[in-house]
Length: 244
Ligand SMILES: Nc1ncnc2c1ncn2[C@@H]1O[C@H](COP(=O)(O)OP(=O)(O)OP(=O)(O)O)[C@@H](O)[C@H]1O
Ligand SMILES: [Mg+2]
Image (cartoon, rainbow, N blue to C red):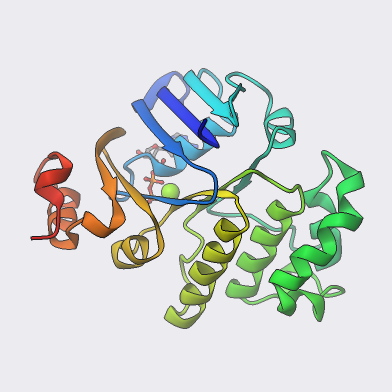
């Protein structure tokens, strides 16, 4: 049983599909990356999985439970955490208040999760009373991930967690992703930087034009061929995309 299974996901905005028939699965304790050009539908796909888009069709299972069509808070309670690409912390609330909101669906998790999250993110401990809006981009991303972890998710969806960060901080985020996966959480991460996606994940899916293009083990993917796919040179099977 996969931690997350999505099948035949079709979703979009105002009745116009952007993502068509996309499928993917994530095993517990592994990191799966989605790469693809701007506008490919990566964020739309994540939003559809967490129940944020009306009219989504297809099946989503979290730890074997079919959550298709469930409201987002119920999906969160089932163990699916989500860090959106933008507006992922409340700027006028303190770090501590942001973390508290992370377990609003199950407040009794707060005293259990807070020490774990602060151990993973020592920077947040010294910033507990600061406002979210006063943090640097990197610290804000740490807070957003920490907030999602407050609900003790089985699967964590991260939409471009390294966007706009310095290479050093981006490495830090990927190293944290490894730590979280190491604790048994399944991670699905959208990453613009193909090199980082290949280095940090177990499996990679390539999304182009709202459809699955190719997927395979990260260690077997050829970055040059992936680049060609991004530029519209079409899809292929994994064998074609293997490192040559
Ligand atoms: N709220 C929205 N309303 C209408 N169309 C939208 C909305 N959000 C995204 N789209 C459209 O859906 C398509 C896919 O967008 P999406 O944000 O999913 O792509 P993406 O792969 O995440 O791109 P990026 O790499 O730039 O983040 C784009 O054509 C975009 O214009
Ligand atoms: Mg996006």
